[in-house]
Length: 131
Image (cartoon, rainbow, N blue to C red; front, side, top):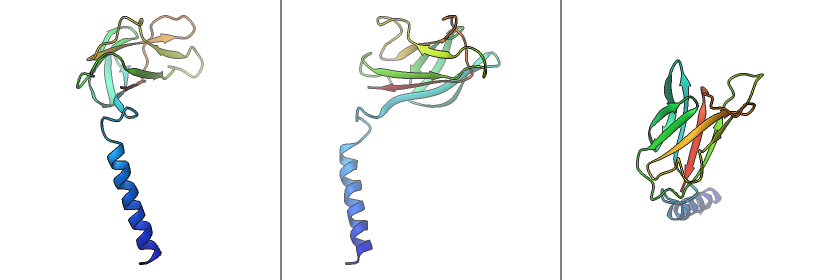
């Protein structure tokens, strides 16, 4: 058996072992993610996985509806918002409070200006949800 045959066999075995350990239910994999923004007076989803829709509740306030509800509201999420200009306030993604804005079927995300702390729209909001 040649060295290349042995390496190919080893790669196949590693692939099999990893495949049995990491699957769609693994907690390290995102359950949902979305890149969206408020463009020309409407909410536009740029790319998404596991997200049915994004609803604009008010300026800088959005509700992300999951395509399939999660088991419960005990999930982790991360958000990143693109600033609207090179010189100006940065935008931050926050959630309303610990008790509000989070359910198995959706999460509320607010986009705020870092200078004033007031709600502000952005053309790019990115959110990832882990459970």
